[in-house]
Image (cartoon, rainbow, N blue to C red; front, side):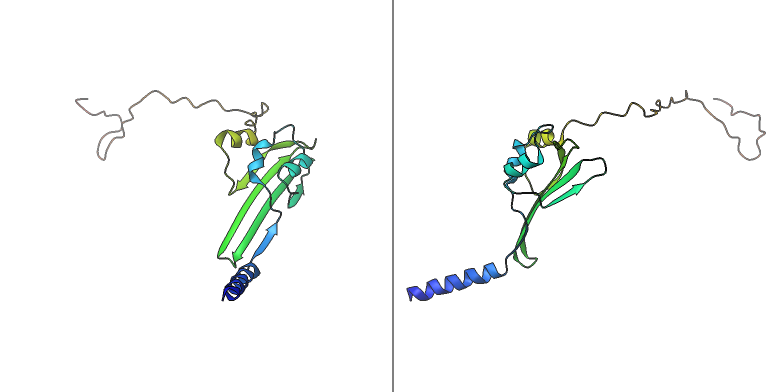
Length: 155
């Protein structure tokens, strides 16, 4: 009887794993907070996240986007887990910023550190001055039958 239960348990586990599929490289999202913009290289990021990026997209300016992505499905499109982190590395090979993440919890200060400072405004832009509102002015439009130059009485 005992052997039969173990056999059933093994068969159930095999059936569950047979419906299991994974894509990408499983990485450790908790290690994102150890990365430092301006210092961490792609190789160091791969080592810290315990996996190479799933895709690397080279940009025309010499920078690159590295995507760490992992999805595991237990029941076809029924039960799955997905996590992603998209990091931008500059032409010098150092981390610039976290571009996007999916299903990764970061403390607000960690996220802000990874997003980097806000980009400085371009001083070559033509900034418009705020529009000055004209002072209040009453405009009277005469009604039908009134001469154009007449004004209302009593006001």
